[in-house]
Length: 352
Ligand SMILES: [Fe+2]
Image (cartoon, rainbow, N blue to C red):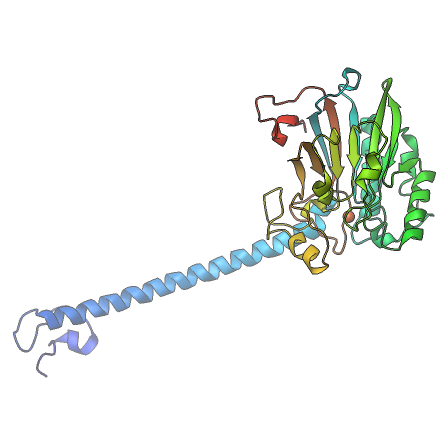
């Protein structure tokens, strides 16, 4: 056939020892045919390699997924961390330098997961650390299922200064349930503040602790909480949405929980991102959303800390947000005075 390369190349596709019928040499037609064949071979090889890579990647992703789910269900919710921070409080009286404050939040006893056993474990850890104050962030029983026969919080009677606030789960059953929680915690030695403040004597100093009722469910009244009271060393608010009500220097330290550190998240950021499960959940239920999800933040002249809490709600799962007991070692000096005065990093040193 004219223009068709001769020899074996025409029959079996090999380009070797082939020449054009017209010119008898290796002409353009020959070259194009050979090149097309090589390209075809290359594409096939790439396809094969890509196919193998895809299968390997898919296998690896599946393994990682299974491993992450197993870790989130069986391991992380059980790892109760003791976190300790040296925390600079501007204007802290010299007598209170070194004051140690324990903060526990979001116990969710009787909820999904291990809220009860972790709570007892947390109280034991605090007992070993012997802090000057024990502060509680609310959500004692999941979904307001307060059980007065439970002994989970009985260990709090060992401490002399236990002060707390209510969370949104303590408010779920209405006022009478919230009152049962308040009275039940009072029988266990804890003073529950509902838009009020209390002064306690610590290290020969009067220390004011203020506590708003749950801001997530709009029970907070910060003006009433602070009215007529001395400057609070610590302001307790179950949910960090209290941030919107803070005015410069309202308290030495503001402590919140509620977010559970995101409970399930993929974001490394301390503020809310679409990689936090709460980004969607709070929108679904139409609740107030705080951008502060975990850790320290400097908010309008106030140092805010948001705890990961202890128990779990909705699902017995945690990912990148392990439960924690937090102890603050208050200091009259900022640990990092070289940092900007409006940066949380100036006032905080992680001491393990
Ligand atoms: Fe909670």
